[in-house]
Image 1 (cartoon, rainbow, N blue to C red):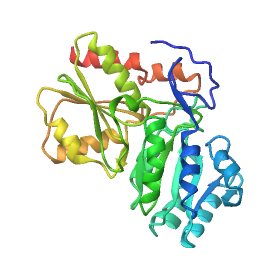
Image 2: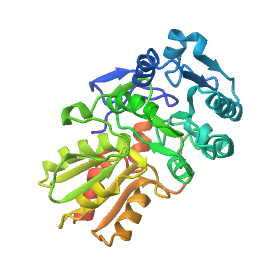
Image 3: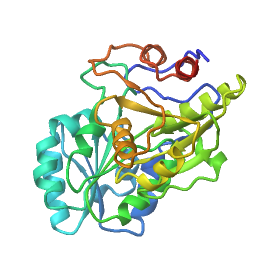
Image 4: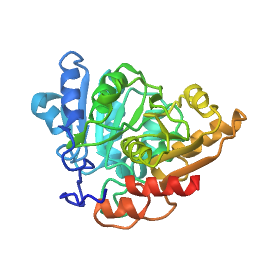
Length: 327
């Protein structure tokens, strides 16, 4: 399981060696949608190439806006475009969207419930460049913002299906983005993205893994590995963090005899784990509950496989942790 990936620390693929991938699923899906939806515009802060928006720029240069390295200007301009009837798809890195431009999103976009889609690359621990670029707390920040829909897709299929779904939704959206060569995982499970819906990908009697983003891929890998140790693991994929599909989460968590483990590529504070815990406690549902998540700390820099192992979100680390909890 300790696969050495030949990728840069800055823009690393999270695909395993030999895994099926699709190139730039967000960029291609947006181009396809924009052919019929002519009010879509693409806007970025000097990161078109690194958020796959360059594909849109090539196809629709007259609808592409390069705002320079100025994220506050980027989201302010997007708010203005939305007021005039455009539907901006805004791309930057997650740290810049949620930390540098937070107040501008809050006041100019969310308060007016504008139809702006913020697509944020390098979510969680998907780059090795240390605290300046690791968006470990982005979901917590955006969950706290009124009117904001928050999405953490798992793979290329999730992203491709997410794009038309969020375009059909009227209002602001924050979506994490996996860019470049993105793994294809969910096609094996008859999966379709639905905004606001969690999907049970596999059943299991011993553990219920509730996950989002790349941790759903890791959860499926861990479930297969743990099966060899006679541990039966169910996986519930939760791509929409807000609004949360509380009905499905409660339905699955109420099944007796299963430990509930939330796995997320995010700090233990304020993300999916705390959202699920609040849901369970509020409904009086009290299974054994654990979290696999990033620590409340400034994370180290380095190669992604090393960092994922260090912080417990690699497949092997997940398996060891779960087996330890089960005794």
